[in-house]
Image (cartoon, helix red, strand yellow):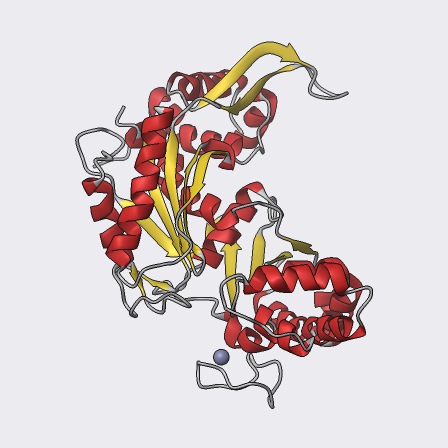
Length: 409
Ligand SMILES: [Zn+2]
């Protein structure tokens, strides 16, 4: 068949997703910026914005406001604060949390679940979905998708949690399938009402990176590297051109197993001195001569110790320096391989950056090719509940790809 030129409505429809993503990520606060970003005429941008408003996704404030000292006043665009939501769920070593998240990464309602995670994944996911279903009933919001964050590598295309870390779950749990079944059992229909809701699931650090890229410290970066700790271990993720780089089977960026001390602690991967065991909260608490205590809450105890005792206690300062040096070594290696234009650090690593950014940059510079990693901007993660917001991003993705199809219009 000879390709024909797209008709006007088809062209307009093709611009809906990119336009929605621009408003969703705060990059198109006005219709003038939207017009410029999309590279279309003012009339097309106006029609696209009106269509997204008619779908209930954004609001267009037609009272012109000055957009700055240059240019004409323009209509103001924002996500609809009363619009549809997605259900986001997070399971971690301390328990679980459910949230309803609107466009723009706005948490509309959230509630933590119990503080222990049972050995049966189906029971845990049924409980977290149950909390989400109740929040949906209470708020009366329309739900367009569902996403789940798990502390495990998630193998694609099966959606199985290969190595649930610090959860009493067996390896290889089909989390996406179980999550989707729980959504059906909780009576949460798909966005068009007649098909069932399909759940999405991904690794928590990947979701941190995705959320921070769209709404937080990673906004505007092209090649964003994220390295973060939870209570135990270190994870990494890479966002390239706005999309997570997950590798051929979902398992890319296992940065935790870079060697940063050849004579260091033995690691569960079979190696020794990995970033995973040399720069996590357990390593910090032990280096500072503190009793690490139970795993639950270990991150919180490490953060509290660093923030309250760093200035006063030389042992805490020495421990922070030791971990910063090792983290810098690992980051320098990653910069040599990946060449990111920004690095964001989460958990204990974000806090180490805040107490001594200069030291971290110095180590990175000394240990990288041409000293260039000393010049890569390094920021601490900025969002609260970032892996939960990232789980919501997974669920929003089909809507961002094709709003009309996702809404069944
Ligand atoms: Zn290892």
